[in-house]
Every structure is written in structure tokens, then in C-alpha cells.
Amino acid sequence: MNWLRSLTPVALLAAMAWLSAGAGSCSQQPAAQLIDVREVSPSDVELGDRITILGEGFPAGRPARVTFRGDLLRPGERPIHRAELIVEGSVVGPEQVEVPFGEVAQALFCGGGDRAAHTTFRGEVEVAFAAAAPGAAPVAGTLRQAVLDVRPSASPRNAEVEQQGQRLAAFAGLQVGASARRGIGLPVQAVAPGSRAEASGIAAGDVIATFDGVRVDSLGDLSPAPGEREAIMGVRRVDSPNVTPRTLAVEGLRRPAAAEFLASALLLVGALAIALLFGSPMRPSVATALQRFIARVRARVAAVRPEGKGATAAGQAPWDVTLRALSTLVLRDVLPPTGAPAVIDVAACALLAAMPFGQYLVAAHLDVGLLFAAAATLLAAAAFTAETSLWGGMRAAAQVFLQHVPGAIAVGSVVLTTGSLGVQEIEHAQGGWPWDWLAFRSPAALTALVLLLGCALIDPRAPAASKGIARSLEGAFVAPPSGPWVDAVGRAHRIVIAGLAGALFLGGWSLPGLSPAQQDAQQVLETAGAAWWLMKTAGLAVAVSLVRCGLAPTPLAVRTRATVTWVAPLSVVALAATAAWMWWSPTPAAQLLVSGALVTVAAACGVALLQRLKHGGVGGADAHLSPFL
Image (tube, rainbow, N blue to C red; front, side):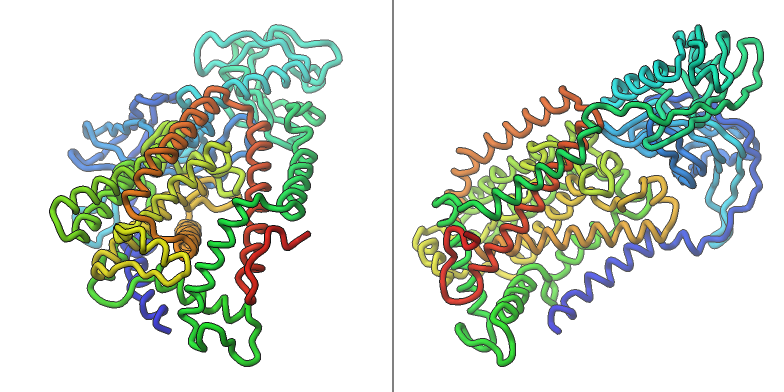
């Protein structure tokens, strides 16, 4: 149980991070309603605006916590109920609080990146201030039945929802004009006789004020949610402020062409992937590389078997023994040992564990570029200290920095896709399901993920002589000792890179089927999201460790030469392909088709690779080109 004792400091520090960042909110006393909140203006905001909250009793010079609780309504999407969004404000007078509407607030309301959409918030707004006396309840005031329209910056979804609105208008028999100004709706110019719009009671001269709760200002707001049969349109006369709900039948509205053959295309891609990956022989060069990989793993696994290199335990299958020895080998590489050097590993785990808690505590102020640069600098410092001479240390540190260039370009591709450096905005640009992850947006994004994870394979203790490489082909090479602190820095670097890869490309702490607003509204869901992200990080760290077991240690100079020769150019090509993909801006249906196909192919490749590794890792014979034929 040595691995369990090694994991104890990580678990304790993660629990402390949870208590300090999020769990403490569960034990707070209810806020005392001593403030009068009367109005929120303007009712329509964009990026760069300031939300003004008017009321009485605001303490001067105190930071305010403004909480929006209610429903988020977006065109073409199902409503998000019981959302809770928290932003920071400042008191500019005894009757006024201002909230700057920046990128973080926009991502909370509208979603991040290319998923951002016009959102109508309907609910209550609470303005709270921390109590002056320690332990006392905070002071707060609440405005009921507040309505706020939030419009994001230019988003690829705008053209798609505009087309959906045009299809809806033609399908319902509506001819609408342009809105004179925001907030007054779309005027109905004509209604086709015998149309669905006429059957619902809409007539020429009416004004469409709302559509499924979304305040209407353009055709893009007339987009029903997927699978919806009836939409509720709020209609009023031009000279009347009263809005009358009208039920419009939308069943049978034609979906985009890409959505109609989505299921068939995914089945075809899955069948082709299975046939090619499981039924066809491997290329000789790939088979040779895989055979060498398996030989190294088998040699290193045999070295840690308690029964010896060739024996197996009585009553156990060879695969069970191999799997147990492999687990021991991986745990030694992933988990921190006991002692002072474990502080670095624990600090890295605690940073990742605290990030998902609180919308504005950690993730809202964390820059992914800064975090990646810090990890690269830490490993470069380890490479510098591992050398015996000043010049050798400087050269090793420079080579480590150069090997991080492809990973930095991969991070840049994520920033290009989401339009933000903030972890929280990048998180909100993704979803909980695999086809909503950035890694499967395009083949270039999947390549960028591999390039970022490749940074976790950088080893500052790599041998300087080619003789060590030759010995490592037989599994006998052991990296030269360089001290427990250098080992701890290497483990912390791999943990941070794995956590970054999970947050930037694999959905981070987003739970499947839940929006960020729903997840942040409940402490239990927030904790579950943090655990889900740590599981992804652990899985990536284990995968990196398995790859390290099968790869021969490469001198820093050789790896740097390979980085400059082909890895860095590949990352530039991936970045250019990402830019081209963003310029193309595929429709949501086409994007779902591409993402689903990539998920299917990636899953089939993973299963095929595991099967081939299992076949080559058990028994005495080496792996052949295609054991399935």
C-alpha cells in the first residue's frame, strides 16, 4: 500500500483546496435582506458595456457580489433553468453599483468561443456585501423578475441561427420587417393565407416581441429548440404594450441538410474504421516501431515482477501478472513519493484541484499561457540544475524551452478557436460530451492535443551519449540519477501538462448534459466536475507514463533537432489549419458530424492499439504485423 500512502498528501491538499475555494459557501449564513435593489439597466448589454444596478443602502467603497439566478434562454437551444451566475461589481455611489461586462461575464451568460449566442436572462438579481463583523451574515438585496438581454461579439452561430430564422418564417408563412431599434421586436408585414401563422392568430401589423422567452430583435431569434413541436410567440400590436402569447406549430420544420444524414454518416465512418483498424495489416515501419515499443515495455515490466523476469504467480494468468507489474511501474512514475520533494507534486495537484471551484476565485483569473510558461520554466530550471557545468546547464535549459514551442503553438490554436486566454472562457466554449470537446472540433485540433501532450515526454535527465540509447532498446537503460527534486519537478510538469490538456481540449470539469451555469449553481455538481477533471488528468498522466515506459530515452540535442525539423513545422501547419477551420465556420450540424466522426475514429484507434499491445505484451513471442488476420 505504498502508493496509497504516497497519494495521501495529494488527497489532503485537494480537500483543503475544496474547503477553501468552494465548500465554505455551504456553511455561510443566509444573507440579511437590508438593501433595496430597484432596477437593472440597460436591459440590453454587449461586451465592453457596464451593467448599472440602482437601489438604496449600498455601502461606499465595498466590493459587491452580484448573483443572477434564473433561466437562460437562447435561440435554437433548450432553455437552461435554475442557472446561477456570479460576477463582481463595485459601488460608485450610495444608490448605484456598476458591473463591468467583460469576457468572463459574456462567457457566463452566452457561452464561450464559437458557442456564444444571444441570451435572454429572466430571473432575480441579488446584490450582496460581506459583513463588517467576522462570522456575521452578509448584507444583500434582491430584485425579482429581472430581464436582461446579452449579445455576444461576432460569433459563427449568428449566420446559422439567421438561416434557421428564415426557414421558420417561410415555414410559418410570415413576412417580417427589420426592427427599428432594439427592444421593440420584429413587425409582421404579411401573413400567408391558410398558413400556420394565421392559424395561431398572428396578423399583419402585429409585432413579434418574444419567441420561446427570447426577446426578438432579428430573424435569428426565431429559432425553435431541436425536437420542439410548438413554439410560444409573444405578440403585441404596434400601439399596445401588452404582449399576448401565441402558440405556433413548428413540427415538421426541415432541419439542415447535414443533420439529416448525421446518424448514417457516423455508422458508415464507424464501420470503415473497424474494417481498416482491425482487419487490415499494419505498415512494416509502424509494425516494427510497435514491436520495439512492446519489447521495451515487456523488459521493464519483467524487471519489477516480484516473481522474477520469467515466472508467473500460481493460479494467475500471464496477463494478470503483466498488468499488475505494469501498474506498479506506472504508479512509481506518476505518484509522488513520501518526503520533502513531494511538496512540488502536491502543489501541482492542489492547483488543479482548486481551479474548478468558484466562478471567479481561480479559473476566472488564470491565464493558460502563463500556466504553460510556468511549467516550461520549471522544467528548464530542472534541466539547468541537472547539468554539472554552467554552459551545459544553459544549453539544456534552452533546449527544453525549444521543445516546448510546439506545445505553445497548440495552446495558441485553442486561444484562436475560443478567442480568449482565460481558462474559464475556454471551459465554457466546450461541453461535457466528447463531441463537444475542442479536441474533436477538427483533425487539426486533435493534432494540437497530441503536440501538447508531447511536451510531457520532455525529460531533462535524458542521456547525452548514443550508447545509452542502444542499451535502452533492450529495456536495460536507466536514466542517470539527478536527485529527488529534479524527479519531483518532472512529475509536477507532467501533471500540469496533463491538466492543461484536459482543460483545453477534453472539456475540463464540464459534466455531460449540464451547462456551466447549471453546474456552478450547485456545490455538489461543482465538486463532481472537479473530480471528473482530476480523473481526466490522472488518465492522461497514466497514458504519458505508459508511453514513457516504451520509448527509448533520447538525448536533448537529438530531440531538439527533431522538434526544429518536423514537430514545430507540424504545429504551425496545425495552427494554420485551425485558422482555416475558423474562417470556414461550419454549421452546427456539420460540426457535429465532423466531431462525431473524429470521436468514432479515435475510439476505434484506441481499442485497436490496446488489442495489439495486449497481444504483444503477453507470452514470449514478439508482436507480429497483424495478429487479427
